[in-house]
Length: 94
Image (cartoon, rainbow, N blue to C red; front, side, top):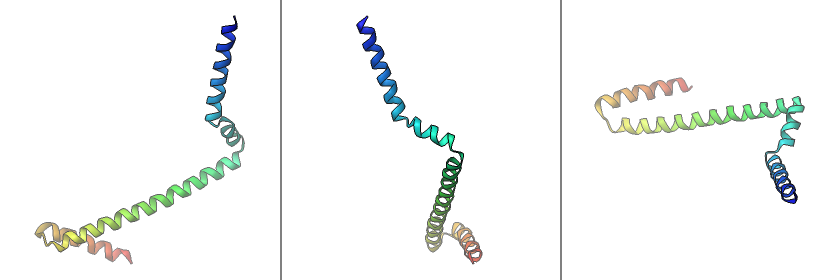
């Protein structure tokens, strides 16, 4: 009989540790406070938008840099095509 209490006590302690690690209290607080939840989601959305904007800008700049290097190699068909693309991008930049 005493062994079952120890087993049950261990299981309750494990469950308590799992709940503490999962931050259930903070999640319940967020779900109960609609204004805070809205504010945090709003900030997360702004951060994602800024991150996407910066990422696309960096990747595009890198691709244009690589394309300009390829144009300087004077490969007949590819060079003309890429120079047209670079010209279009540079005209639309301003």
